[in-house]
Image 1: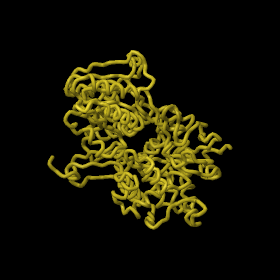
Image 2: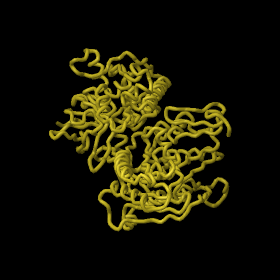
Image 3: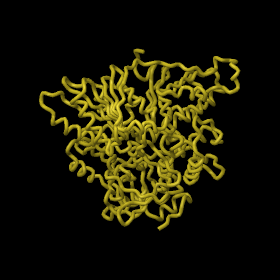
Image 4: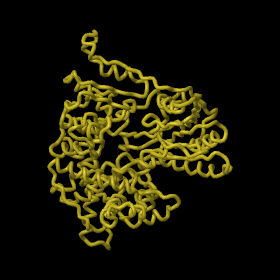
Length: 588
């Protein structure tokens, strides 16, 4: 449209809004549109709303579809477009069908299905004769064999996450080094959500002359992006999904077999520009046993954020809300249980005021929202709002704080130790941020020297400022950051005031994360206080191979059959009892 971004065309994502009064076309996440519905329940400023990638069935998109159906009854003139990359169109059409007009009257209000056929070429599907024990090794071997034996064209390999991708990258690089100097070169490239924009853009660039690209990707390349030049696809047959177990109260990122719909999407990546091949690293019998579609997030997630959001949108009876796929009742019960302990809902399941309404309006998970609001609450007298704003911003980076320079692991570990707090990762992240804005003067060179991801640190700065503005809009007084604050720890050599501040921050974390607590066992593992699950400190944690009695943790991830906890901090048993809102009594 020949305009600057933010004028006629703009966008809005979490913690960033690039729009103006002139904006006519706005790209935004489903989560941001739900936030807008908090202040404009009928979304009256929009005449057309298009929900893209609806087939992914994310929590936010499923809630948004239910909300749009409700709004459509009040605003018949609203046009809703739902786009899906898989063949679920009939399901979406049936969901939006007006049951009162099944006789065909007022047919212009009924759903229509428009199918846009892309230009595709035939793709040969090849299966394994026998199951493989290690699909990462098999993927590497298959990619190298394709490079040596097949015709021109780039290779796309689907793996489940960063660790597998980095392992495969190393193995492929080692194999590529064995090629004859005159042979076509092999260039492995990673693609996953945690990469910087610049790193992600490499996969879209043309390879150098006499070079074949092999792109190692998560399911981000399944439908969200299209990479030209792909002729060969290698499908490991797995995808990492968030899965919440209401019995153990653990929310893990766990590998699951892909669905048939996902397998079809992956294979289709090979036939965009010419006939291609898809190498499935599983047997044809295994394919036949796969589920038709992936279980929607709303049926396998911790629903506390969903319930909080729906309550804030004025939907009081959650059970009667028109979900595209209704969530299991056990997940809803667990969600209310947690929200009640957090103080977000009362004994009648009503949103509390001001705590519950404020938690709903902060665009962060309920547990961190509780910490942020507790930090300045005179009832607790923690007085750590500035520090908690920083921790909320740093943990939202999802582990992308450190920059991994090739072959510099020891140097990186030494850099991390400079900021380390013996209590664990949260205070360490706080120390990193404090150093970035003071000693580092927010400069890229300083970040590079200290093995920090400059783009991530800039984003933390932006998120922190945005969260502070959110608090101000909610009527919460925001305390200015102390840029001369010392590194924090409760260690004996620290001044008493600094040690007290560190203790208050850890207590504040407990008010939100009491449900994610674990006790160290004699063998060095941890056992979750709620659910009795055996867990291990992630190798990236400062508490890896360190002694701790009790900890609270921010994230859980399952790899190689072991459950790992990330971003953890030492806490005291008494704090868990006193600050958990009656959630549980700790057993020794």
